[in-house]
Image (tube, rainbow, N blue to C red):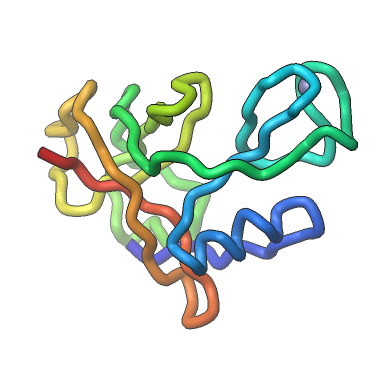
Length: 136
Ligand SMILES: [Zn+2]
């Protein structure tokens, strides 16, 4: 599926730059040892700004849940309805969720609980974005 092109800001730019190098990173707060995604200017737990750093992830996860989208607000996806909207729980920290369309998997056939791995697809010639595929 085509992807909306992200517009990186000062907070999210390291994440999008890492995607262009095919690396999936998340923020980590060294004050409370908590990871978070999506990127924010401060730690969602302790409010610290100075202690946020970027850390690598394994790029692996599990399918946490799935719905079938029939009524998207994203105009570019409306002609592709119905499509999968899948929640991915990150292996390194299952509290962190990513969204996926799980390309190639028919709607109503998403294997919840299956292991997935990140891949990177072009949202534009200048920007790669994360997508997920089933492994094993
Ligand atoms: Zn914190």
